[in-house]
Amino acid sequence: MGFYARVIFPWACDLIMSVPHLAEARREFLAQVTGEVLEIGFGTGLNLPHYPEHVRKITAIDVNPGMHARAEKRVCASPIAVDHRIINGERLPMPDNSFDSVVSTWTLCSIKNVERALREIRRVLKPGGRFFFMEHGLSDDPAVQRWQHLLNPLEKLIADGCHLNRNIPEIIERQGLRIVKLDRFYMDKTPKTHGYTYRGVATK
Image (cartoon, rainbow, N blue to C red; front, side, top):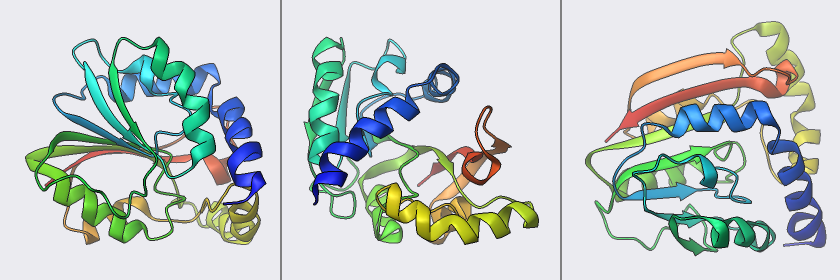
Protein backbone atom coordinates (compact mmCIF):
# COMPACT_ATOMS: atom_id res chain seq x y z
CA MET A 1 0.00 0.00 0.00
CA GLY A 2 1.54 3.28 -1.15
CA PHE A 3 2.04 6.63 0.58
CA TYR A 4 -1.06 8.18 -1.02
CA ALA A 5 -3.35 5.36 0.16
CA ARG A 6 -1.83 5.22 3.66
CA VAL A 7 -1.40 8.94 4.41
CA ILE A 8 -3.07 11.33 1.97
CA PHE A 9 -6.32 9.49 1.31
CA PRO A 10 -7.20 8.82 5.00
CA TRP A 11 -6.69 12.54 5.75
CA ALA A 12 -8.84 13.60 2.78
CA CYS A 13 -11.52 11.01 3.52
CA ASP A 14 -11.76 12.12 7.15
CA LEU A 15 -12.14 15.75 6.08
CA ILE A 16 -14.75 15.11 3.37
CA MET A 17 -16.82 12.56 5.30
CA SER A 18 -17.03 14.44 8.62
CA VAL A 19 -19.40 17.18 7.42
CA PRO A 20 -22.55 17.80 9.54
CA HIS A 21 -25.17 16.46 7.12
CA LEU A 22 -23.35 13.13 6.89
CA ALA A 23 -23.05 12.99 10.69
CA GLU A 24 -26.84 13.30 10.95
CA ALA A 25 -27.28 10.61 8.30
CA ARG A 26 -25.03 8.30 10.32
CA ARG A 27 -26.99 8.91 13.53
CA GLU A 28 -30.33 8.07 11.90
CA PHE A 29 -28.90 5.06 10.10
CA LEU A 30 -27.27 3.48 13.16
CA ALA A 31 -30.23 3.93 15.52
CA GLN A 32 -31.54 0.36 15.01
CA VAL A 33 -28.21 -1.46 15.35
CA THR A 34 -28.26 -3.98 18.23
CA GLY A 35 -26.38 -6.90 19.79
CA GLU A 36 -22.92 -8.08 18.82
CA VAL A 37 -21.76 -5.66 16.13
CA LEU A 38 -19.19 -5.91 13.34
CA GLU A 39 -18.37 -2.79 11.30
CA ILE A 40 -16.54 -3.34 8.04
CA GLY A 41 -14.65 -0.42 6.52
CA PHE A 42 -14.36 1.35 9.87
CA GLY A 43 -12.25 4.05 8.24
CA THR A 44 -11.35 6.90 10.61
CA GLY A 45 -14.09 5.93 13.07
CA LEU A 46 -16.66 8.53 12.04
CA ASN A 47 -19.58 6.22 12.88
CA LEU A 48 -18.41 5.67 16.42
CA PRO A 49 -20.04 8.70 18.14
CA HIS A 50 -23.38 7.90 16.49
CA TYR A 51 -24.04 4.37 17.71
CA PRO A 52 -27.01 4.16 20.11
CA GLU A 53 -26.29 3.98 23.84
CA HIS A 54 -27.20 0.31 24.12
CA VAL A 55 -24.26 -0.66 21.88
CA ARG A 56 -21.38 -1.22 24.28
CA LYS A 57 -18.89 -3.08 22.08
CA ILE A 58 -18.11 -3.38 18.40
CA THR A 59 -15.57 -5.26 16.32
CA ALA A 60 -14.22 -2.85 13.71
CA ILE A 61 -12.11 -3.73 10.69
CA ASP A 62 -10.35 -1.77 7.97
CA VAL A 63 -7.62 -2.88 5.61
CA ASN A 64 -5.86 0.51 5.55
CA PRO A 65 -3.36 1.11 8.38
CA GLY A 66 -3.57 4.86 7.74
CA MET A 67 -7.29 4.79 8.46
CA HIS A 68 -6.60 2.73 11.58
CA ALA A 69 -4.10 5.29 12.89
CA ARG A 70 -6.52 8.19 12.38
CA ALA A 71 -9.35 6.26 14.07
CA GLU A 72 -7.41 5.62 17.26
CA LYS A 73 -8.17 9.03 18.77
CA ARG A 74 -11.92 8.44 18.38
CA VAL A 75 -11.62 4.88 19.68
CA CYS A 76 -9.82 6.07 22.83
CA ALA A 77 -12.44 8.79 23.46
CA SER A 78 -15.44 6.49 22.99
CA PRO A 79 -17.42 4.79 25.80
CA ILE A 80 -17.87 1.86 23.40
CA ALA A 81 -15.26 -0.90 23.64
CA VAL A 82 -13.77 -1.33 20.15
CA ASP A 83 -11.87 -4.39 18.97
CA HIS A 84 -10.06 -2.52 16.20
CA ARG A 85 -8.29 -4.68 13.60
CA ILE A 86 -6.39 -4.08 10.36
CA ILE A 87 -7.79 -6.89 8.21
CA ASN A 88 -9.41 -7.40 4.84
CA GLY A 89 -13.19 -7.75 4.69
CA GLU A 90 -12.80 -10.44 2.05
CA ARG A 91 -11.25 -12.83 4.59
CA LEU A 92 -12.79 -12.46 8.04
CA PRO A 93 -11.19 -14.55 10.83
CA MET A 94 -14.41 -14.65 12.89
CA PRO A 95 -16.38 -17.91 13.30
CA ASP A 96 -19.67 -18.54 11.54
CA ASN A 97 -22.77 -17.00 13.15
CA SER A 98 -20.85 -14.53 15.34
CA PHE A 99 -22.74 -11.23 14.99
CA ASP A 100 -26.26 -9.90 15.41
CA SER A 101 -25.51 -6.83 13.27
CA VAL A 102 -22.99 -6.01 10.54
CA VAL A 103 -22.59 -2.36 9.53
CA SER A 104 -21.20 -0.92 6.30
CA THR A 105 -21.17 2.78 5.40
CA TRP A 106 -19.65 3.92 2.12
CA THR A 107 -17.45 0.83 2.02
CA LEU A 108 -18.80 -1.64 -0.55
CA CYS A 109 -17.85 0.81 -3.30
CA SER A 110 -14.15 0.22 -2.75
CA ILE A 111 -13.71 -3.44 -1.76
CA LYS A 112 -11.97 -5.14 -4.68
CA ASN A 113 -13.80 -8.45 -4.41
CA VAL A 114 -17.06 -7.13 -3.00
CA GLU A 115 -18.92 -10.37 -3.73
CA ARG A 116 -16.52 -12.35 -1.57
CA ALA A 117 -16.78 -9.75 1.22
CA LEU A 118 -20.57 -10.05 1.19
CA ARG A 119 -20.37 -13.83 1.37
CA GLU A 120 -18.15 -13.37 4.44
CA ILE A 121 -20.68 -10.97 5.95
CA ARG A 122 -23.43 -13.52 5.42
CA ARG A 123 -21.26 -16.24 6.98
CA VAL A 124 -20.51 -14.33 10.19
CA LEU A 125 -24.09 -13.11 10.69
CA LYS A 126 -26.19 -15.10 13.10
CA PRO A 127 -29.38 -16.64 11.67
CA GLY A 128 -31.83 -13.75 11.53
CA GLY A 129 -28.99 -11.25 11.94
CA ARG A 130 -29.14 -7.94 10.10
CA PHE A 131 -26.76 -6.29 7.66
CA PHE A 132 -27.12 -2.49 7.80
CA PHE A 133 -25.76 -0.73 4.72
CA MET A 134 -25.56 2.88 3.56
CA GLU A 135 -23.67 3.06 0.27
CA HIS A 136 -23.42 5.25 -2.78
CA GLY A 137 -23.72 3.67 -6.19
CA LEU A 138 -25.38 3.47 -9.58
CA SER A 139 -28.15 6.02 -10.04
CA ASP A 140 -31.54 5.10 -11.49
CA ASP A 141 -31.28 8.12 -13.83
CA PRO A 142 -29.66 7.16 -17.19
CA ALA A 143 -28.19 10.65 -17.59
CA VAL A 144 -26.44 10.41 -14.20
CA GLN A 145 -25.38 6.84 -14.97
CA ARG A 146 -23.55 8.01 -18.11
CA TRP A 147 -21.50 10.46 -16.04
CA GLN A 148 -20.85 7.81 -13.38
CA HIS A 149 -19.48 5.39 -15.98
CA LEU A 150 -17.38 8.18 -17.52
CA LEU A 151 -15.93 9.35 -14.20
CA ASN A 152 -15.44 5.89 -12.69
CA PRO A 153 -11.79 5.36 -13.82
CA LEU A 154 -10.77 8.71 -12.32
CA GLU A 155 -12.73 8.02 -9.12
CA LYS A 156 -10.98 4.68 -8.65
CA LEU A 157 -7.62 6.42 -9.04
CA ILE A 158 -8.14 9.32 -6.63
CA ALA A 159 -10.41 7.58 -4.09
CA ASP A 160 -8.42 4.41 -3.43
CA GLY A 161 -10.46 2.02 -5.57
CA CYS A 162 -13.91 3.58 -5.07
CA HIS A 163 -16.49 2.74 -7.77
CA LEU A 164 -19.28 5.17 -8.65
CA ASN A 165 -21.34 2.66 -10.63
CA ARG A 166 -21.94 -0.42 -8.49
CA ASN A 167 -25.55 -1.56 -8.16
CA ILE A 168 -25.29 -2.27 -4.45
CA PRO A 169 -28.70 -3.93 -3.79
CA GLU A 170 -28.25 -6.26 -6.74
CA ILE A 171 -24.78 -7.28 -5.57
CA ILE A 172 -26.01 -7.85 -1.99
CA GLU A 173 -28.90 -10.09 -3.01
CA ARG A 174 -26.73 -12.12 -5.40
CA GLN A 175 -24.71 -13.24 -2.36
CA GLY A 176 -27.72 -14.74 -0.56
CA LEU A 177 -28.73 -11.86 1.68
CA ARG A 178 -32.39 -10.77 1.56
CA ILE A 179 -33.06 -7.04 1.56
CA VAL A 180 -36.02 -6.26 3.82
CA LYS A 181 -35.78 -2.46 3.78
CA LEU A 182 -34.34 -0.15 1.14
CA ASP A 183 -34.38 3.62 0.59
CA ARG A 184 -32.91 5.22 -2.52
CA PHE A 185 -32.15 8.94 -2.64
CA TYR A 186 -29.60 11.59 -3.52
CA MET A 187 -27.60 12.67 -0.50
CA ASP A 188 -27.89 16.38 0.27
CA LYS A 189 -25.04 18.70 -0.72
CA THR A 190 -23.38 16.02 -2.83
CA PRO A 191 -22.98 15.78 -6.62
CA LYS A 192 -25.50 13.35 -8.10
CA THR A 193 -22.72 11.18 -9.52
CA HIS A 194 -21.37 10.61 -6.01
CA GLY A 195 -24.49 11.06 -3.91
CA TYR A 196 -26.96 8.47 -5.15
CA THR A 197 -27.47 6.50 -1.94
CA TYR A 198 -28.79 3.07 -1.02
CA ARG A 199 -29.73 2.83 2.67
CA GLY A 200 -31.17 -0.44 3.84
CA VAL A 201 -31.23 -3.61 5.89
CA ALA A 202 -30.67 -7.16 4.69
CA THR A 203 -31.05 -10.42 6.60
CA LYS A 204 -29.45 -13.82 6.49
